[in-house]
Length: 266
Image (cartoon, rainbow, N blue to C red; front, side, top):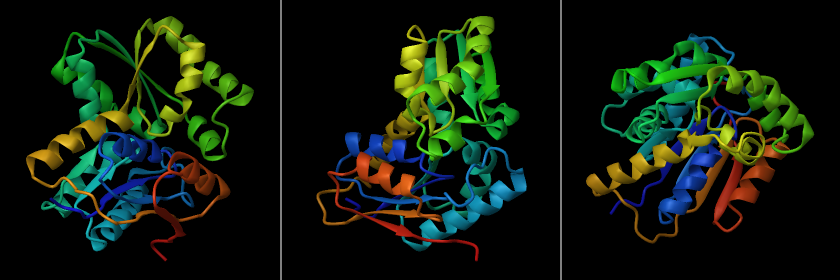
């Protein structure tokens, strides 16, 4: 049994969707979350800048004695997972891409759409990873750069978000012909209701959910599962916006938690 916290981080509040999955599947596990809300979005930034930010955050989570770190961000996973694992070889560091790819391939999908940030789509990490395991699978990818800023501002449902999603997706769905869609950004599960409403025939794959399934397996295999404990979940943000506070309190109102401002790299 290991009651230390699991460290999560994301460019903003999107990674909270992974934390939500953890609470549902492993309710005894406690969380230390860092959302880099002051510097979001990451998807339009350079690779060197993203690596600098990610290293700062992981250094902080390690200093807090986290037993595992989950990169709850597709952009950081695509660009930084290997270097972060090299920096901390003794700590399990999980990314959101590999477990999602494994699930898509295991389900036998033959036409797959992927939506994500510019950085994730530019790396083609999903396309390369899916085709490596299943060469016959057709993968179509699209960057949707406006979605994360809108989500960070609280436009999760309603006309503005629906118009934005349709702006990106209508031609993409029609021209590509896929019936499986990877939500390649941890912010995007907050839009599942919108996607289901606009494109009801498409099966959605959430990277936020799949990484928690992998985390559960690793914790069990390494005898690191938490038992009942009094640890308090902690949520830190580099800019404690009203939306970050509101979303955290909404998602985790039944959990004992603390929300605080924590700036890094100053």
